Length: 304
Image (cartoon, rainbow, N blue to C red; front, side):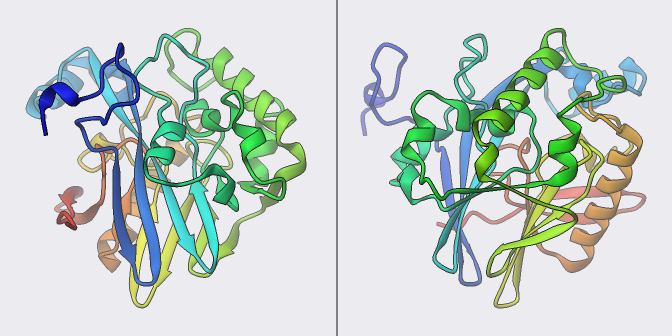
């Protein structure tokens, strides 16, 4: 393949050089991790409750820049029991100042996944980088009229009057998050299917509310033929393995988010199942190991 044949802003439609989808199986369940792109955010978002010098030292140890961190954005497509389930929908196209995010729709198409084939959407929570893809112009018209969107009841209630008193976000983000969530609730109201604590979307596909990051934040657990994988949404960030007590700037209840993170990582380490998360580097498939008083990220072997 000629490197000159790769995608450029002035040459749309050509193949991208970087991989943007990764397929694997969990027992009898088909899984595809799809990259929505990357989001540039201040490094302080990793842990706003720690000494900036300590945070800067961690970033340096990880060979990461001190000021701006590129956050991966991952969504997942699951096929089980005759259903095609999209877990989260990416950033969408509403934010032109975030040009490298919002690729979910085009990358689903590149993977041969017709939007009309999606029977269910699971929203881990309603931050704009998880729901925005549903709000892209023309997307709703291409989705099935009987599409079911599963989200925790606590999440929809929270966004009726959201509390941003404990977050630490860059300027403009709270307003954008409010606006996006309000629009989603309005446009998809008839297709929302809320649950209290957990709900089986399809055979072996269980969505469970954790709270913490947002009141209705949820994870999706896949289980089939003795194999298991958890999509953790925003419960786990890269720094959360070594420093699960660091508060992420987007957490609406940072203390509870830290407790959720520790419990989840302990469970994943104990049962040795695979982990995928929104903001771990694509394709993000990994395992969790216990390393003394903290955790260790163990990349999964690439499945060719």
